[in-house]
Length: 151
Image (cartoon, rainbow, N blue to C red; front, top):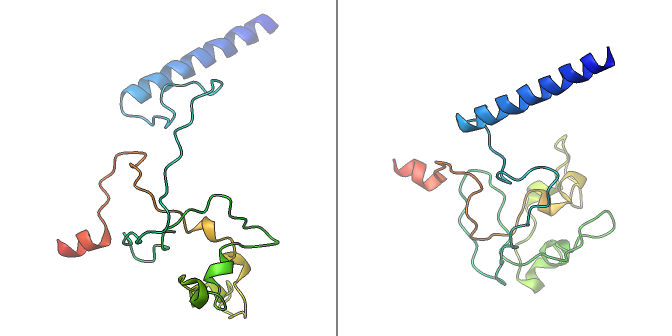
């Protein structure tokens, strides 16, 4: 009986694997890692080079968080400190020449305004990312907000 169960399970696994390969060939979902198996070590892409302070990219859609125009590698943002606020806080932005934190970052989920950055907006890099000229991970037909209004 054990052998029969094992044989059925093996047959089911083979059939499932074959059907996944067929669906990938017919336009199914393909992994970003390509044909590499999960248990193999795929070489990581080279880190994107982020130039030192430069002009910001234009925003592509309404309410897009601004991109970070400088390197942030090594910045500490955790419960105890936030390196971003050392330049972007309302007390430091003038001396550092940085953009000040938006008033929206002081609102709680219930619309109450706090005297400091709201806990839900404290971890800056959840929304703001360094800008880099990187190719899209997948082909797409996205048009920026300007392109949409011109049509």
